[in-house]
Image (cartoon, rainbow, N blue to C red; front, side):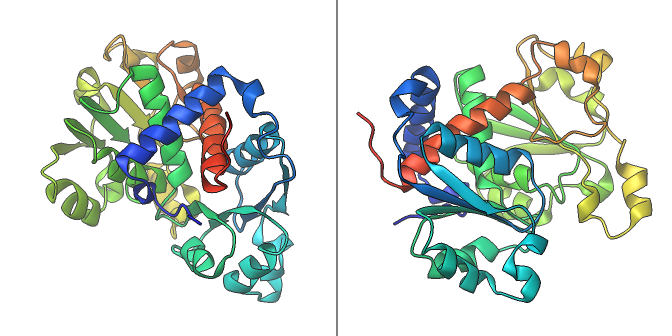
Length: 306
């Protein structure tokens, strides 16, 4: 039995197989419509989510399986003081697989240590968001045709953005990747990411504050929102929340085949006028998220579809 706590839990070869499966699901959805008949997915979301929770639910429903769970800690026995370990032991009696989101880093790992069913980390604090990373990898590979030889700009909240941290770790395993980190001083990429991942592997990167200075260099622009829920000080959030706004004027500086990605939800960081640009890939990214979660569920449940 396997769990997914980090994108690094899969080798590059295993990731390629997972993405190949997701592409086959996209091309032949009818082949997989009953692959999980009789299987049950538990969605244990201790903090709010729209895209991730509904994407998991859509994925399991597309496979013919069933879903149940809760969408906030307040609507679970956690409100009564039940531990994560006890919750997953109980859920293991009901479900075949579980997706867990938790505000505390490492909570899904604690669950996986005692679980008798596969546990998927659906986001833990500011730490990891592996299924978003799988979604991002599938989006990049599907739209750019490769996961190597890319210049990737990550813009916005790079300090607290778990999607950014996971994506950097995952892409660092591919050849000839260059990162450009675009953020204000207060939201820079954490030092441990730079030291433990990039500098340790001699991966080129640079840090800038102005998005206009690097737009023409990018193959991919990965926008993120400034997350109110990660701030202790409301004044700091208000000061930084509109620091970057991508609009058509800035898009004119970019390559014709650059793609714009965003883990969503967006607030003000991408103007709605950009939605009409063919390089805007963030809503296609959402659809890829369903395919890759379908592939992940099949892989962890060891369901083979001929």
